Amino acid sequence: MIYLKSENEIEKMRESALLVSRTLAEVGRLIEPGIETGKLDLVAEEYIAKHNARPAFKGYGPKGNEFPGTLCISINDEVVHGIPGSRKLEEGDIVSVDCGVEMNGYFGDHAFTFAVGDCDDDAIRLLRVTLESLYKGIEQATHGNKMGDVANAIQVHNESHGFGVVKDLVGHGIGKSLHEDPSVPNYGRKGKGERLREGMTLAIEPMITMGSWRVKTLNDGWTVCTADGSLAAHFEHDIVVREGKAEILSTFDYIAELSQKHEKIMTHG
Image (tube, rainbow, N blue to C red; front, side):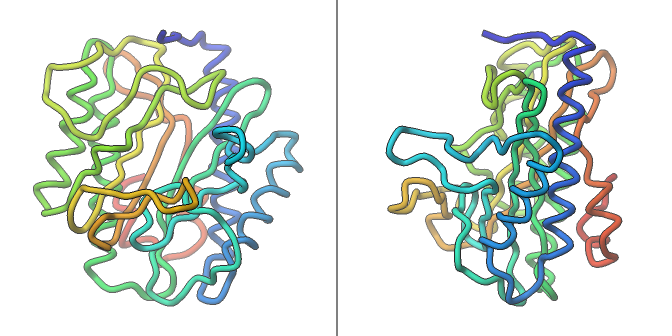
């Protein structure tokens, strides 16, 4: 069932989304070669707790294999759901940091893929195009459009640059639950799918590869990697469907303030 949000609920969701945005920036300022992903996770957990919220991902999942981290940290060929630990970032890595919080009864869920040190031009292009596709999808998330309009905009932009669009993983509705209806795929046909309505709140998250769209899950039951070992990128915003123009609740502005090195990636706001 799809829950349309009131303006009061949307404001609470904005608070949660912006806390995630600030958390990603706190993590981003520490991203450099040599840092352990577990250290990044600890910083995020402490920052969220300081703001009277709780990590949405920690403890999520099936009994006996609950996700152990505050962040999903996915490096290079890891698409999503990478588990933080003792692994150290290396020069030239790309690393997706996905974070969720619950605050005042509402969730925020937001992701950015960072370049670690100097990355090659192909990796930067993957990040830039994936981020561009996120905004192209958001442009279609208006009242009266169909979910296929959002999905197709993301798919066409990435495939026109020769990249693979992961089909086994999708975005989702968000609100009082981390994952709500409807599903938000990154591929599809214009004019098809769920009709978008004012007050729908969505987490739109293109997951894009430099090679094949096919993925596999590692033995830890969480980490999803590209099947062919190619690089993957992941960006995510929380949005509200509006008449005429979608409203973005999260922001990358805090990340943009960190360093000029993100300039080549962040061709949008």
